[in-house]
Length: 410
Figure (spheres, rainbow, N blue to C red):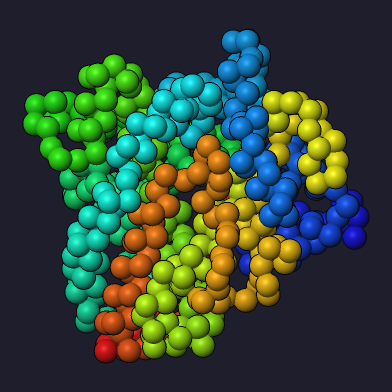
């Protein structure tokens, strides 16, 4: 198959149903696939994706190297202009920054997201999960996404940051509205929604910061305020960092909870294996991340001439890092399309690599550990109740829209 013959339509129902057949075809090409819609060369092989993701000369944004006029022209080209709040708090956050600014912000956040701090959250996660399942105890079938999974990550990361429980459901709405504008096929309605959500998110966090100044707590927002008062964070950086933490810990975790549950139900032998040996939960969770990477696409720009996938590229080239494709690369994984909860080693790239490695990967894994362990203890049987689910359409997301299950209490 040639590039001209390959059909790559991330917004289609066929792609949502099975992107991996397309990724496999892309891997057979002699050179990376050029996706004109986003002016990117799409990388599908683990070796290529890792090489770019771990190379510090490959950056998320070229803004630091552009004049103000060129930067604004670039914003207009991708329709990221005329969005004052989005430009102020989303387009300049930790994820989108580079160089000294990125290093400073990342170092501050890393100080707080230690393994020890994450481990201390287990009891709180367990308590919340138990309470949520108690409220579903009279039901014999329910939507695993809307009735359960969608409620957990936001409350966990919200509590960690210091958001009152009653406001946590709104975080999901804001987060999804902002994140949707990162995907392909975005239009003016998506733009207006992303800007309005960012504005409301900002006003909420600004009020919360004011409250914390009056009454500091043992939470992440108070720690960020301490860094601000010490001159290590500006006021906008404080808000942008808090917003990013809340957004990053939301949709992707909901998606991987849904796809992880779906994988267990599609491969009942693996589900039985996990039930029979709950100690396999750690490797099972990592296999869920590999099998259906919840954030399957990111990008990098080359700041120098380079050779990737056997082809030469000029500085300024944009590369699409297809983490979902790399995690099914047969050169990296034996039988990559099989869901295997005992897979070891499992050197996947679902959390990225290098300077932009996901900060919340340990918290997401802990959420998954507690949730699936608890589900298997509380239910003797879990089955699909409404056939195969539809998956979200897009290049940057991967997860079922809904997942109706039937359950039998243990």
